[in-house]
Image 1 (cartoon, one colour):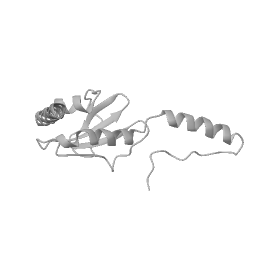
Image 2: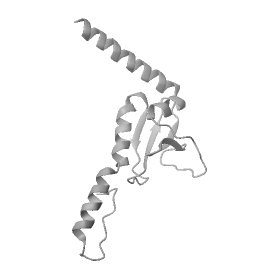
Image 3: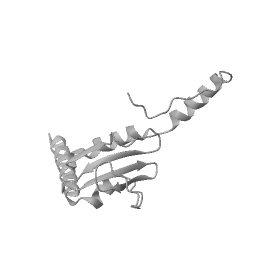
Length: 139
């Protein structure tokens, strides 16, 4: 099984308890970007053809990669960091270091710029939810 965190290497046993407590506290405060990426995928999977966290590009505490295929059949590799999401490649599992695309605060904003069909699917889903709420409120 592959893990996102490297095991802590200890040069000696002295001070182990203090180091473990400090590292545990710091790790608890850090976001696990792979978990964050999985949540992003689950939020918008209904409005794209395919979307998944990359198994070939290594995720870390501060970065994860998401592959997405829009309804227009365009493929992208997205980078997720604390700064947001951005396109880093135009194929699954591709990172082009020369590509300097802007960061988006949300996956909704990013997909809204990439895919008119996403925008339509998202709008339709929102409309269906509002209509369901209206029906539930009237019964």
